[in-house]
Figure 1 (spheres, rainbow, N blue to C red):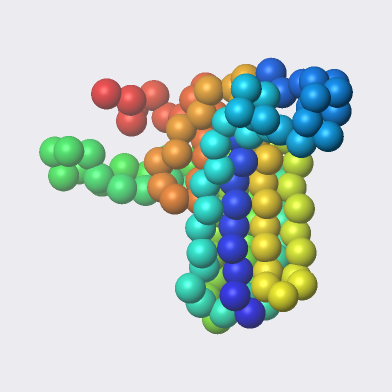
Figure 2 (figure 1 turned 30 degrees about the horizontal axis):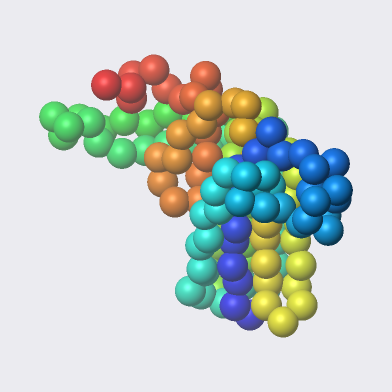
Length: 139
């Protein structure tokens, strides 16, 4: 089945009281529920999702000088999309507010991130709290 993954950065300043009093409970231009949304479309067939709490993620690549690096990022919430090809997305546990998984017309994963913790997005579908990001990779 088709699958879309949505990451939302929640707006800590969103006022439900203001939304209910002035906009029928909906967000408005000056009272946004989310700071931003990142949407990924998984192009291979997805049959399900397995969530891994407190997992580690191997962040691998090369420094500009060509030297390889490999860091284990601890305390991650990883979502393994199963099916034709295994796909992993996720975030640092400290960033996660909540998530939703549904398999109606298509598979949909919605991940809501807290906005008061600085974060980085080194690869699509992976959000790491800045304080947990390897210092060796900060230039």
